[in-house]
Length: 255
Image 1 (tube, rainbow, N blue to C red):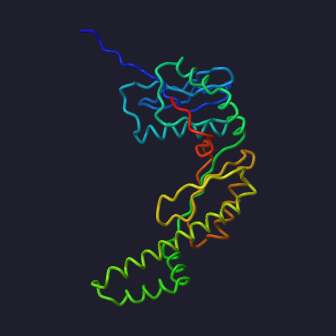
Image 2: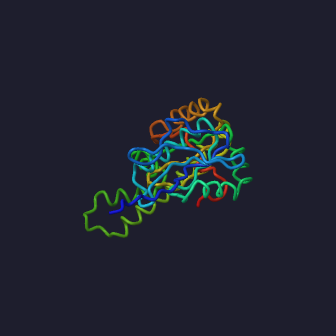
Image 3: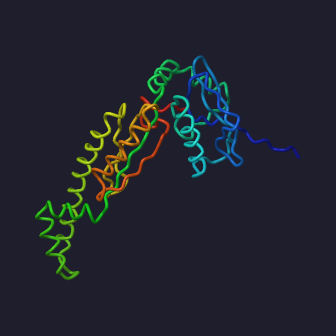
């Protein structure tokens, strides 16, 4: 009986300058993790690894491997992340992808030279933001007091109205706090992109493009802002340095 062979394709992680070579230790998806190599065309290269075409993609480990490779690359060289899950049939097909929009990719890499992404995420301390909202909104505070002594059978309309008032107030605070964060960090960043909230208590969620040589300065600015402006009302998480996922101009390259 003839042995079946597994067809393989080439998973593309990102586009880099043509003189960038992955190290021998660079690994991508798979178990065991597949070696990462570069396919070049002109002044461009693509970081790729072989993947079985019948292998489903999207496991948590796959996403982690994809991000790890791109984030480590971004610290050393400019990289354009390619949309996760882009797989082409051959190295020639990868080279054709690079050729198809060569000048645009090259210009984008030039823009990202010496720059990395950071993401700043703030989340309200629930008790603190609720205290603020009630102290600033007499209608909400009056409803809270009315409902505090009311039986569980109290009109649902009152509870819904209180929820609407609090939600609207938090949304307004989020907009104001996001702007305060952007203003505070503008001097240490090249650009920024607000991200949509992923939780009702999000205070801010912003991606910043930062010059590599100013990483320490940016990180200190975040720490200073968090301590001076948000100390007891917002918890802050700083992610980075990362590949510039939020700053790839136009649609992400894909096959």
